[in-house]
Length: 549
Image 1: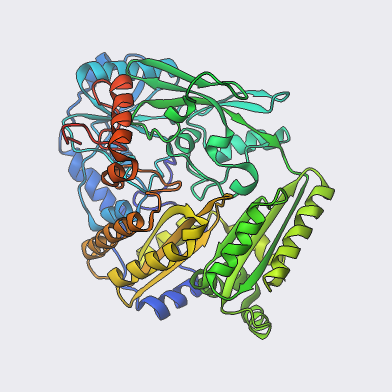
Image 2: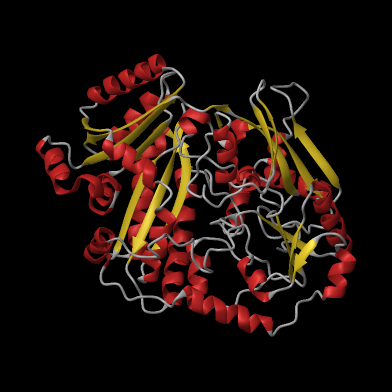
């Protein structure tokens, strides 16, 4: 976890949490005037100070007895830092001054054996354990449950890259390593994992695996399950080692017990991951596909089904395209002259498509680009060159910082995502956007894009903006109401509960209808086997049979 980041925010850029002038102008025009919100650093400090007066259920003496040889902290500010994730509701709760439950302690194991010791001790004492890597969950996956005694198990001290098998193309890394830490190590040796989620700067390898993460280059490198060769899971009953082979026919693939387990079955402590040679050749381009979003979706489908598919594909709907042209990315780089050019070419309204190609071979890359040009031409797309694509790549991790600034101005800013088959993309896109607008009213703006696609379907990723309210609690209630309507609409559309954000606590109650009673029984059976006391991340992923959290 980034201990330098301010409580209640993703982080600070060199210029601070400053709202970009173009973004501010767009927000004022579409959402109304900013009203401001309490400074999260001030309210978070008051929360930590107020909670410090409340005794933890664990004393220093008991901590030393429970966890000999393992570093730990009872400090209130440390416990506060590990108490919540990074959803809109999490971050607004700091601004609203909500004194949510803090963990009673944070432990910092340094090895797989340490984690086993922590889990054994907690299981014996009935102490709940919440595993935390980067703390970037946006579905309540790392929120402290309201139970008698709760310990956070941080992976901060388990970030070592342990081995690189260059001949096999496999890296072994501890689960607490962040994306930048692993990429830096690999890049120096001429390799890459190729996994770049929006949370890349803070998320950990264990978090990738536990939530079934998908990176922005998934078209070329695959999702995290495509990269996972093997893993070790520490559980209250011992170690579960999975995978380790290129392929096998030894019954069900137990890697999928670990993938998406969200800390509810155990703690991922290390992983063997497939890596590839760092690409010698990289190129990016952008185009506007005229017409509605379905035309852009058709282009993505055609590209996805080709062996010459791009490494990166992102197709924005008309609303997101308009926002990008106004606020950032291509609009920020090329300004009004760019928009005028595209209009003259009759491409707007339309959908912006960003494409990226990475390869060790110039010949292969040229073939990939040629196929994309042909596909775009068939759709009547207008090429706008490489500059917008390069600008998007350079700024692709800045979204959370811009969200901080918008929230500081009082605006509602949140995202949600799903995945459906191609035949349902259009209806699902229209239905979900309509539901959000109906819930949040005229001072809202809904936009979406496709950035993860498959031969049979694609993920839809929505960003929601809404007008400021003077009371943060009112804004939070607005989003809770909208989110409930969204989840109901997902079920009606036949769309998944989540594509890559995970289940956590926020989506848990929507799981039973999604996986059915037999599926729920299977999850509970796995949990009871690996976690007989149900101490692991209580309330996340699956409910107890008795209905308790």
